[in-house]
Image 1: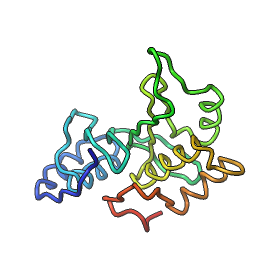
Image 2 (image 1 turned 120 degrees about the horizontal axis):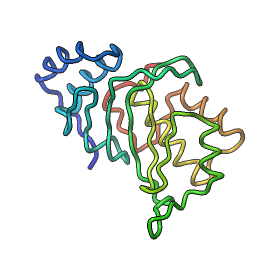
Image 3 (image 1 turned 60 degrees about the vertical axis):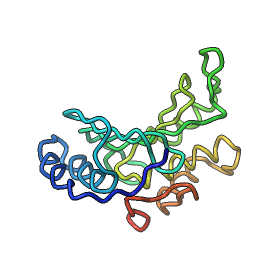
Image 4 (image 1 turned 90 degrees about the vertical axis):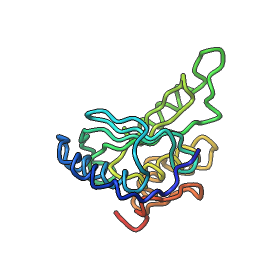
Length: 177
């Protein structure tokens, strides 16, 4: 089930709790997510999980962390979006993701996380819209639609916030860098 926009007055509770997280950017973003998506399905001291996502994404979570990342621009990662990749569905408990695919995507970005036993990809960034761009890129890569140098194409898409048609941009980040 895809996330729906759920503006709630309960966001103040998360604004206050955001201040308790070690990583300020992640805590502030968590508060914005709670206002947009409502209360998380799971909440721990250092993680919040929503068991749905935007468009084809099936789960969204944020962690009290700040992973420095310099490609394609300096930023910090802390929010995750998970999407099933039907072409990667495991068979008889064995991953069907070709090692060449894992290697190629790893060369594109360390924020593309492949789970072959679940047949899923997870995008990690500091903004959900960038996760949407990443998931759309992986979808196109798997379908053979990425032409030229994949790393350059990914960089171009990230910088332009080129989201797939199915990404809803509920955080309203389309025009942010």
